[in-house]
Image (cartoon, rainbow, N blue to C red; front, side, top):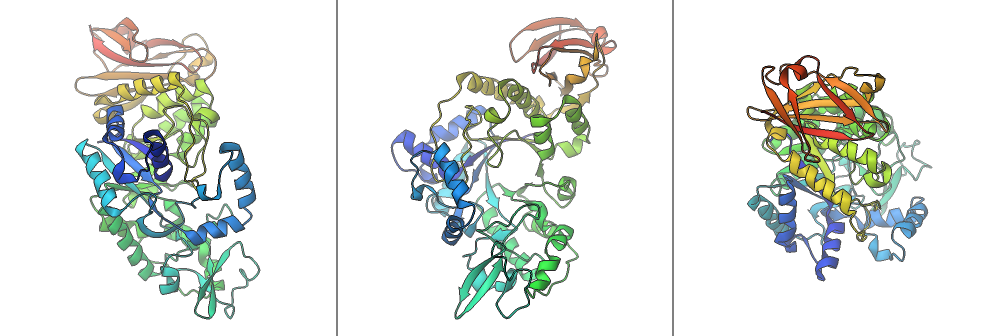
Length: 500
């Protein structure tokens, strides 16, 4: 499938919400078939159970004692008044073992959930966090060489007074200081321990973990995948590594090339930034995040979006499109209703994988921290829910998955507003669709020549699948002068075009 649709849930929050609805405690093996049926009926191809692995008790303790806690607790007061200490269960990206968290279930329950999805023609996606583990992962004591570790006798001046970059771990009568995982653009993650990707033994061990996970799913989403690319890792850690006494040499191969070879039939999806997306596809990733599109849909103009969509169509098939996920603000809160609908139509009708987050379809506005084990009840916004159901139904047609996608030029009609229109076609042997979105708050108009897409000697009936309206147009006019389109602010057409 060229353009699959993925539904992400924060697994433990989702299970909590289901438990409230059904008045019984759920783990993943107890999910009623009706819940899987609903996702199948909406047209999803994969479900991503985010945060299913064992969370770190030490990581949670460090988090509670650190400077992040007071603002975090204040935020919880606003989104979950009356919250309790036990509601905060730790980060799903501070993993103490690649074993199911007891709140999520067991290995057998994951197998059962996958089987339920397979019965409905769907697949299961799980997490892999390559850059770091939790500080209480068994490797810290059993294989400290897998990390950047020092003791008080080592020359580690860069870390000596900086407790924000290290966590103490006791081994016998010695205290080791383990460097915390980090993105170089942000403070270190206090509840993590940084892995040394230039240690061949560590690479082998991580490939082993990846292969273990692969036995229980159909695909893996790889967190912050660009951090372990050789030159990025060398830039970020060459200095600190010397300060902590690590001896290492830059490998000749990339870790992701080794990983791809180890799990040849598995879907690999990369969370990736910094213009590393193309490189990661060359290393074997099937899909990579399209954060550029997200940022432009949220902040930029139609012109900037069209420039981005001018990339090679083969590359675009490998992009993961989204307008929210567990890291980003809720789209209903961040975009406003009009821009949200235009953005939703755009990302839902582009090539590549489309990611939808739990609560997005219902118009949820509260973004819950991933460390929270509870869900919050928000009533659905019925109008938005109906909009998404219609959009998912439209884009479930085969042509949006197996057809050929082409970005179309838009020309002036009466004024300069044509620049606000984004247009493209999907074409298969039996269907032709034209998507036109006005990505501006004011009325816009333009001409879209469709020569080569249709027969200029025929007349066509255009049905707007968003509202059911029909139009009759001559193929010759649309081929040469172009289809004339006038759209109100943030309005759109999804035309099904059939010869009359």
